[in-house]
Length: 499
Image: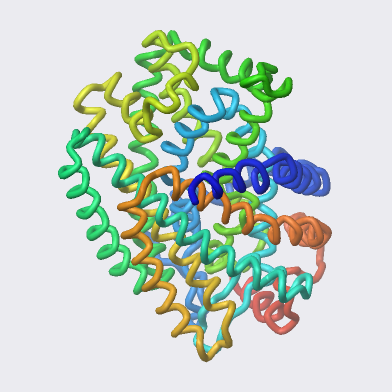
């Protein structure tokens, strides 16, 4: 089964058609929005993370008291906890082993256009989100597909694929916690010790995930807003320390990335250009696995934000992909490459089959920092994985609710949560390559409906963006805050009140 799923994922779903679809969507949006990820990058910082840091400790006043929303930073933290996970560490290691250093370059390419893609997803997510009678906010690609394109069947397909992908993502993260602890705690070939660690991970993850997801997006947002900044800063500091120690190998690492990205070497008599396609395939697959731009998953969390302006939350999407890929993934790649270059390894792919992705990542920390690096990695990896597990539980839950009438949504939510936490136990116990292949497959299936919607609604994204910046310049025009007239009027009144 694993071999079949790997073949389908690698040769069909993540083959040339998917790469072309992702690139085409990102390029189209970039052109239509006149490279907003470049023009408004400064705005994305000044209107997101800067005011958030200044407001730490202050009580939020953006809600209306009736809507069960969360702050912009909590929405961002919940979303980035789904993107900044083991994909940034183990995923990068997997890309290096399978696709070579060149995969990092193609991660950057996918992320550059992903900045605009993720911005657009957030804009549409807020514009088409809906509120039920209890004040709960529902948003995501399934809503802008259904209400923006009037394609109910495609929206339902996205929701189904998202539920399965959520379970797959949870399994991957639980599996990576197991693999990390088995390596850092030195279970080695001791099958009994390895099994005990796997069982303990399964119990721990199931218990604490259930405890937190019962509280919904508010609890997930609060937990994520406490953990994410700590783990991200700790990882960045430790990675910079390792790279500084191996500073003489940095030029060689960058040279290796660029050279390998355009390698025309053949493989086993294969066609010319195999090296490029291999690097592109793993660079795009692991890059999107990491930052989720194009999948449409993180927008489900962003849609729960208390912000009234779709463009403002869109700018959070630009910052999210930037910090995820251009900062954390790049630091991971440089940490691994510089460590192995100094150790005399010229071809990182030669290690494939002899070392696991988790062990490759850990070796960069341990090889440079010794026991201290081992301790830090043992703390970091479970945190990265656990926050991702929490975020994806919410994505799957919202998808399950979308598929049933409103009166059955609470029941659907509880059923999904139960199934989700049970699959975490399975993920902690099964082999690594199976869960990676399974999640790659459903990530691709989930991306297809979302990409179709982004392409067909790119004109709407452009209008919303232009409307916002014209109003910022002082033009007296009707704001585009919601696709629904009555909601738009309500939000308009709240915006005017806040000014």
